[in-house]
Each structure stands twice: as C-alpha cells, then as structure tokens.
Image (tube, rainbow, N blue to C red; front, top):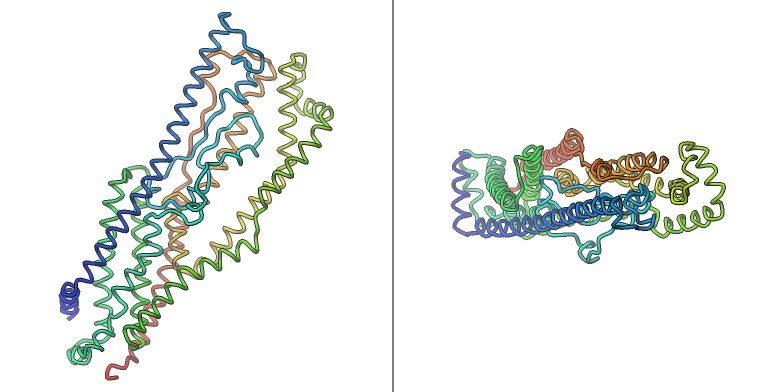
Length: 478
C-alpha cells in the first residue's frame, strides 16, 4: 500500500509540475550559492599566493643585498642594513602567517569575510596583528554572502514547506481523503508516505546538485578530512529537512485548510529561522559585550606615554631580566634594538588585560550560543555547516593561537642574534622560521557537529510525535 501511495503522489506532482519547478529553483539557488562561495575562496587563495610571492621576492632581495654589502658594492645605514638581525626581523623579513581555506570553504563563507586569514608578523608587539584588516564593502559584511549554507539555512525550508503544506488538506479539500481512507490504509501511512517520498526526492536532488557544484568549484574531496566532512554536511541537511517535513505533517494533522497551513508554517519559519536567532544574538551581545577598538587604542596610547617617561627604568629592568643582552649595549644599533624590545615587552604587558577581556567575552558569547542553539534548528544547522566548512570562530581562534606561538618563536630566534650582534648571511635568511598551519583535530569538529545533529534529530522526533498524536484525532469527515 505504501508503494501505491508513493506512485500516486508521484503522478499527481508530475501532473501539476510543482515538483519540477521547485527542483529547478533549488538547482539554480544551489548552483549560484556554490559559485559565490567558490569565488570567495579563489580570492583568498590568490591573496595568499600574492603574499607568498611578495615575501619570496623580499627574501631574495635581502640575500642579494647582503652579498652586495659584503662585497663593498653597497653601504646601507645600520637601520636598513640587511646584515642587521633587528632590521631584518622587525621589517625586512616580516613573515606572512596564513590560514588557508578549508576543503569545504566554498560551501559556506561564514565568518571568513569578517575574520583575518593572514597576518604580516615581525618583532613588533601582538597588538599590531589587530590592525591587519582588509578594506571591504560594509554592506556586504552586514548582509553576508550568498552561499550554499545560506540557501540551506534560509531558503531550503521554504522549498520544503512549499511541497508539503497541503499534504493532507488538499486531499480533504478535493473530496478524495475519505475515499482513500476507505481502503486498507491509515491516515498516518498516507501522510508519512507522501512526506517521505518528497523528502527523499528533495534530499537526493540537493545532494547531487551540491556535489556537482562542489566539484565544479574546485573542491578536492580527496583532501585530508574532506570526505567525512561532506558526509556530515549531507547528514546535517537531511536532519534539517526531516525536521521541516515533520513540522509540515504536524501542521497538516491539525485539520485546517491549506491556506491556514501555509500561514502557520510561514510563522514557524519566521520564528525558528529569523526571530529566535536575532533575539539570541542581541541577548548574547548585551550580556557579554566585547570591549571596543577605541578602548584598546586608548590603553595603548596611555601605555606608550607612560613607557616614554619610564624608558631608562624599563631598559635597566629588561637588561636585568635578559643578562645576555648586556654585552651588546656598546653598539648603538644593538642598544636601539634592545630598547625597542624592552618597550614592546612592556607595551604587551600593559595592553594584555584589554586583549584578555576581549578573548574572555568572546569565549562567553560563543559558550552562550552553544548552550542555547538548541532553541532553533536554524542555529544548529548554521553552527554545524560553518564548523564543517572551517569558516567559524573555532578555526580562527585555533589559527590565532598558532600565530601567537609562532610570534614567540620568531622573537626567540632573533633575540640571540641581536644579543651577539651577529652579522647575517644568506644562510641565516634561508634558515628563518617558517609558519605551517595545522588544522584543528577533526575529532573536535566531529564532536560539535554530532551534538548539532543530535539536537536536530530530537527536534524532528518531537515534531513527528506531535504529528502522530494529532493524526489520531484528525477530523476526516469534517
């Protein structure tokens, strides 16, 4: 009987062509979303390639300048001398640290257009990293980019509801429901048979189109971790679709007209997709506000003024903490380098409380979102998809942690050279530390994603349970 229900539903959908219209619309939306996401990823990759080429050219020029200075063909001032370790480490050989796009980044831009994905790192203090911003259209940043994740979170439910708002009501309004139920078939079997067929069709179509668009945009699913991430992506989309189909069956089970069903489902979409996420966002920012950039600049300004007045004391204290630099104070350039290092260390210490408050508030915001994301399936899907695409706050904070570690290693590499007043050679340039981005362990991503999947599954089961309860009380004859 279930097969007969599916076959009859297929004939009806094919006759009124609604399935084909919705399928074509879904294909266009997914294709355009993947295209936009792929364009953003290519922009990032081109930017990182240009940065690497610019740095390689600088390093080649430094080595050439060292050879020219050693041969007597050039006599640069000490602050521009390529053999001076402070000049090289602080400006000339500044190193780009970067976070390359994740394998599925083309599917969800997420926060990658807001958060920096590369820094130009030198001996300067940590706060200089915060000033490395791209000039971007603020309207684009406010509204976000149209990508596959946007299609799934906002538009996919509307297409599901357009196919399912009249699963039972249309039969009742056409006068065929009572005749159908006079056969050996239950109302629940009829409703879930029609909903299941449409869900499988939409899920299969969206998966195939997403896969084709993903491959066409240059995503390499054979890359490390790409295939399991894509499978989890499909599972999240399937669970999201299951929730909305279950919600549609529940609304149909109330026995109202098709128009009333459409209005009720539109209200559910408005609440779960727009209102609850917006209210949570406002609440999070109100309870855990992040310090403003003005506060950071003010703290730096006050610290710089104090440090200028206390330069002599800071120099003495720094030499006391770093006795290896004492022998280098006779050289004027070395003395300048040591004084600068002392000032930067003190500036880092003074600004650290503001940066720590920023990190703490950001952590509290994310923790609150993670705690209350189960209130809305849309929030669960967004967090999961951004996590799988590697365009969320978690991956950025992992990158920032690696950057801070490398910044310390960069300073540690140059400090002994400055202390001994070493004259750099091309071999020193070839042996400079290089940054290599290491992905966050997949287990962490898997844990967060499966938690979101569990929330979506429970939401779908709750909607299905309500459907079963109301279907038993459905007024067939009314």
